[in-house]
Image (cartoon, rainbow, N blue to C red; front, side):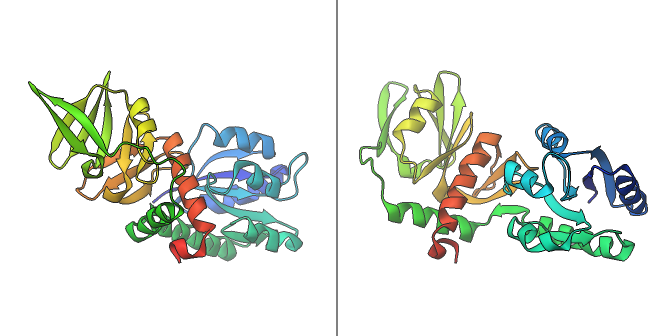
Length: 266
């Protein structure tokens, strides 16, 4: 795996030294260099990268403030490169992968990159099935303030109408003015937009992951990262569904809510 990397330092000589060290490593590709916090934040909004090598002391906005501004759930793996060791504890509190002091030594940089690879591999599955089950259990335990969510949906099937239990629906997709309900190996069409349908379904069971997809959490195997803003939801039957930035935000909220309760993920 090639680590797409961005260097962030207001000192040109510091960036040059890092770039020369990284040029010796075939598994690293430097895709951009930024001079300050505002520049790297703007870059991250439109590019997906694997690694951020981030200076702490910069004019205008420090590296620590960059992490706080972007949010650690949205950041790529981040290694601080700085001359100031006193910020180490705060850096790790903000979920930095490592902390390398200047002047950077080649061997120390390699060790930091190994940690980055381990972090990426460990987080390739955003939420595994056991974690996801714990999140769902947490949501159910809270109960829902609204009790009149749909339990069954009326679906027209040729000349007859049938009732479909919402618990049997694994996922839903948008089909123009209709929504396709995936029940086992069948797809049943209902004349409702996916947005309206989403509002009628219990949020402790159904989650919108994309403008075109809603998933039943009971049928989700795991959720995978495909970069900092996208992802893939793997269903238990092997179906893979794209997850948009909005879906990632919804998943982040689920994960955040669960992590607030120690019993949720354990």
